[in-house]
Length: 278
Image 1: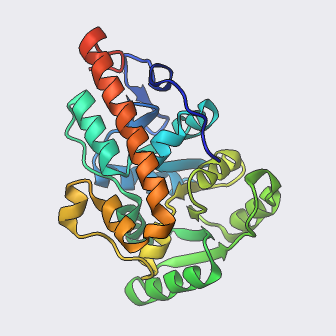
Image 2: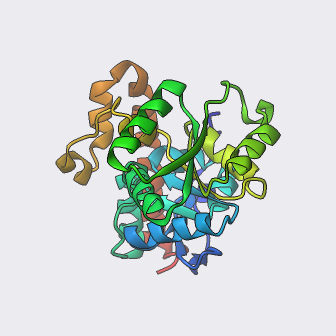
């Protein structure tokens, strides 16, 4: 679903204090969304703690695309209702660092997935795979069996392609809860996976993470950009080089809109002072 274009002044969160989620990690507003502040290790721990306690909760990994989608108020509510919203994309991370002067590190879904699987194996937590194709899921299962033999992947489901409001949500909850899963890894693509998780909060007895393309990376189907490109916020360019036909329009439009949001906020701060916190 494409968000309707909103004026930059309306799209920026207007708060002066950090928002604290129920899991005791603070959030700071960045353009249209609230981003969780905390080390990579702390966020992995909190996610696993939520799962281990079977707390119905969800995590959004926020990149430029999600930030732009969150111009639409309903989707902004979905993202800002997440228990954690990690700084997944470098543009989001740089914006957080620029506006709030905090030494935040990147917490990307591509890094979270292997870290969470490792911690789940260490704690004996059950993991459920939801979304993507059966082939991709099988590759994930095979790799995990080789590298993390103690990991318990307790179930997986590749749902038919349809809008969230037409999905078998009751059946999804029954399958996931019946498996005893603590952590549910969700790969439906943005904004669908975030809407699905928000809908399932209170129904699924565990922590849900929307990690999209991390499934393909872990399965060995996609390749990640070199570290120097990631550090320079050029991961999008690498992906565009790999899949120009599919991604060129999305990246040109999305990145341009993100820059508009960023520079409008920077100018507003320069002219009128900060309304997003110090």
